[in-house]
Amino acid sequence: MIHFADRLINRISELNNPTVVGLDPRLAQIPDFIKEKAVDEFGETKEAAAAAILEFNMGIIDAVSDIVPAVKPQIAFYEYYGHEGLKAYEDTVSYAHEKGMLVIGDAKRNDIGSTATAYAAAHIGTIDLFGEEVPGINADALTVTPYLGTDGIVPFTKVCQEQGKGIFVLVRTSNPSADEIQGQALGDHLMDEHVATLVEGWGRDLIGDSGFSSVGAVIGATYPEEARVLRNLMPNQIFLVPGYGAQGGGAEDVKPCFHNNGTGAIVNSSRGIIFAYEKQGKPGEAYAEAAREAAENMKKDLGNLF
Amino acid sequence: MIHFADRLINRISELNNPTVVGLDPRLAQIPDFIKEKAVDEFGETKEAAAAAILEFNMGIIDAVSDIVPAVKPQIAFYEYYGHEGLKAYEDTVSYAHEKGMLVIGDAKRNDIGSTATAYAAAHIGTIDLFGEEVPGINADALTVTPYLGTDGIVPFTKVCQEQGKGIFVLVRTSNPSADEIQGQALGDHLMDEHVATLVEGWGRDLIGDSGFSSVGAVIGATYPEEARVLRNLMPNQIFLVPGYGAQGGGAEDVKPCFHNNGTGAIVNSSRGIIFAYEKQGKPGEAYAEAAREAAENMKKDLGNLF
Image (cartoon, rainbow over all chains, first blue to last red; front, side, top):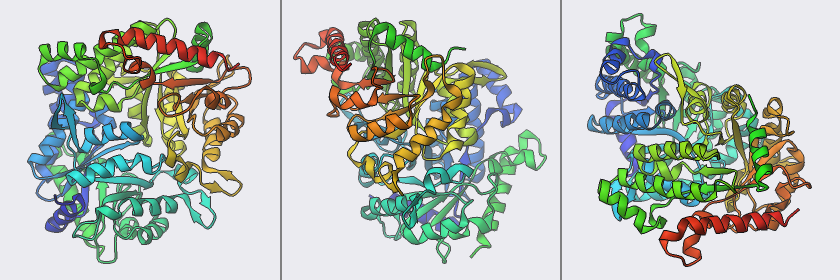
């Protein structure tokens, strides 16, 4: 079993590109030609919305799979259309795999005991179907929330261990109110630093040949000072970094999330890539090539850091 | 628009029963006669699993809807079967509504900005479908996780305000490792007490005629001392209390979650009710009447507290 961390680090190194494309398909921003085709087939239904999302995603994946190591579908935008939407999520994961991309499911799941075990099986493991083990959604990794402590994490790390999968634990998020809980002082250190030491412990048995653990951390790009502190507390964690582009962070802001040799982080951009055609003033039909151009620019931008 | 809190408190009062039945349908424990029927129709597929879950849930709902105010489906056990499972979740919500029960979706969702807005719309609000507003899953309330602070909560409270819905924010969970984050000391108080003051603030504009807010709190029954402190910090919050029965808490343990007049909390039991037939040594065919008996016993047990 190859560790998820090694699979991700190897692919980043092969493509020389530490980025992940966030697949957050807001229907309003999906080009009309895709929506019209779906509505022609299914009417103005959730099924049509799901079909449009899937086709849109396939175009993005086709456009970037040879230059970007991973995609990160944000499940909320699929759940939005109920079970039809979840089907589009599942099909997106499968299609990304077909095209050789790793998939980080952004679901921020959290629970305890048998409930967390069910989430782990569903998203990154195998499920028991009338006595037979079959794949679930089968993403390579999942984002999870740490508020319940170790009980909420072990069911996921067990699956990571058995199936070569990974998790990214929310440690420091990129939003303005992150400080309300994550930035609270526990004596001489902050809550997120305390969570960082927990994450370091949770990941200790999942360190691969790359030196990185399959238990990574979500670290927002909007708190560079804090990112430096967290980098030191979690030397073996891969940082999944949201907030580049649309959320205001630039390449300089994400720099502290990397080690000095340029390893150890993967930076996400969602809207900045998938809806680049709008910003570039291009027609909807050019959305995929616009996404590729934006992904190439992001690669260059990050490549200049080290 | 009637506040969710008022709808729930009124129904608890009408039935004189502050309990909620957790619908956590593990396939292995669903009676064989239900599974065989589903497999006959759909083969050993996810569709069959979902059909069995739905039929099982309908039997439970039929058996308890005139004595129990609400059900709490745990979405992990539905997501386990992918989009087919999510369809069973959606249909369970609809069926519970048909039978006059309130539905608290146990999903512990959390995210920020437009992503949290998508979750809120999907689970308790209405979604935009090609320009038309249509219902999402349409639960009455949803459990949410507070790790991201106010930014992660406001998108939900906005929907609560507009549509008479509710949320229950995780404050103190019932599991052994809850202390690792929730029990950390911030000067002279604990993290969960700090979160309690945030929750109190988030709920202030959503207080109904009952005196309770549609922003409630999840408070585990396994920390009675702490529950007392939290009760004082959140006088207007309805406490959703897991941990009764299967997780080791008894009626005396949940008592501090209530106000002295017996209001302000709703206690969950999942396995102890839905799979009571196993404990009672009854055949699978009697699962629904066993569930009703267990629900009646729980009502009596809690009724003796005040």
